[in-house]
Length: 266
Image 1 (tube, rainbow, N blue to C red):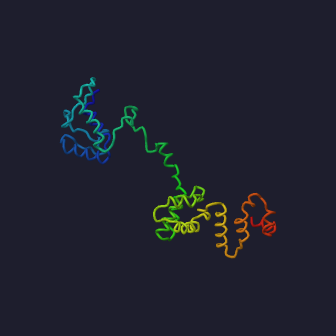
Image 2 (image 1 turned 30 degrees about the vertical axis):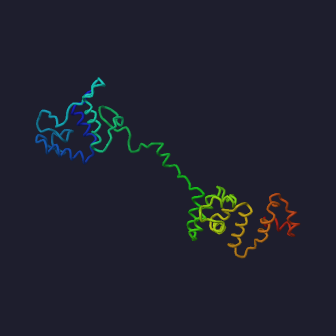
């Protein structure tokens, strides 16, 4: 395969941007006195903007020569030609892609346009970002609570043990055995009620269902002002198992409450 110097030069020119092409034209006009620039509308103008004023023998620019690819793969005498061809596009900051062009009626046109999109890339861009974990959300809330550095560290430690359903099921002995230095039982006992009061939704960091419901009842009573939730609190604190088993008459017998009052509270 042979690529003539004129073909190599044409490949270089095809990749030039508008400003670079204008600069190249000015450079050629300044360096070759036999060239002239025809303005649009000149009589007898042909399709070429840059044309020789008079016939001149073709000259090879300095450093330009025929590119030859030998049939014998062992012939390394033309390896520089391969490097010249590779560097054609790199000189202008682009990568020459021979597959990006199609031949049609002896003219070149890009195979792809600006409207072409990669479906895989589009799918990745349209995929929703991974939602933050429960631990990340709770830590973000906890960092907004005013507390001492020791209490803050104790709260962060306890949050790391909260399950995905919001319960803190790890027993106290395990929490104490794995606690970092400086976090004893006293500071952990202070941090837990603060977590339960400040984290939302109410009931987070509860150790079981009974404590979760009591936290919600107490919060509702505080926000409701005059609302009397004493019956609800009594039923959850003392008779939750009976409520789960629907033993309402037994609850009424032990508490002296009417069935209507118990059903209303439930």
